[in-house]
Length: 138
Image (cartoon, rainbow, N blue to C red; front, side):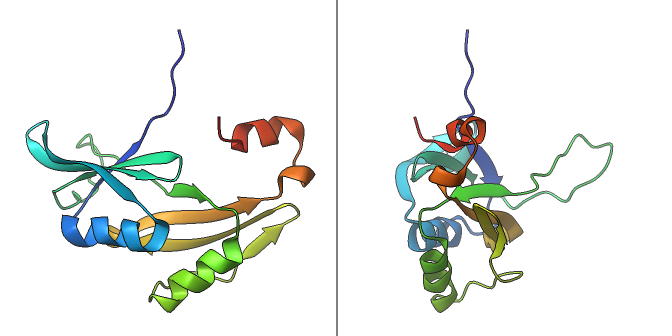
């Protein structure tokens, strides 16, 4: 038996704006838009990954109430400087400049509803084999 992480599911205060942001900034593609589990949901492909979006505002985190938070979503790209330039030209604010750690570089920004994103790039030819296998698309 195997299991595989399939998608991240996020809340949206304004689902139209959230979907448009993912489409415009990261090339997201809507594959389903309808009622699912009692609420409108939009299922998107973002590159090789998947994102499900609830048409509900994010709940406030309240300890002991069974609510949880996601720290960030990791978005792998093949040309981080170009992506950052394109997103900045469209008004995205970044928390810092691109940070580099040998073969790994990343930068953080927020998507709608303050969903934290890590945009990253790793040089495959400089990555240890066990990490290269983790980062590779199937």
